[in-house]
Amino acid sequence: MPPPIKKILYATDLSPNSTHALSYALKLARDNQARITVLHVIEEVSRGNAALVDAYLKEGERQKFFEKSKAFVTEQLQSRFRALCEQEYPEDPDCLDRFLGIEVCSGYPAEVILEKAKALDSDLIVMGPHGKGFISQTFLGSMAKRVLRRTRRPVFIVPLPKEAPTA
Image (cartoon, rainbow, N blue to C red):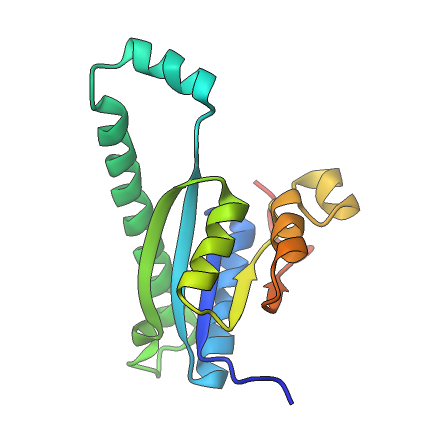
């Protein structure tokens, strides 16, 4: 018998596929009386590129830019949650309570997803593959593969439906 699902880590890259995966995460949370933590990782700039960016920015501006990006992403995700709850579960006033919080971090996405899943003691990771076009049909998606290879937790990967736009 599989262990109960009480904590879900939903990893998003804000693509159309990740929105589709969010509806699955919410359905799983509702069916299992679970709670969802949302994670978005802003990919870290390589050291060489970071030095180049810092050469053109005043001290501390890169951090300010990250904080602005973090606030924007958080706002975007909150509006997606509200819209999803209103569209799919209008009769459920507690729908938004399924979301424990939003974490926006910088780093290498697969690494951060794995670290957060462990730190939060998540029972399940939900994500969509990040591939586009021909690549997504041929390969699973490099980020999803990296997470799958290195975790012992269940991972639910939600493919983009055929009728959905890929932009």
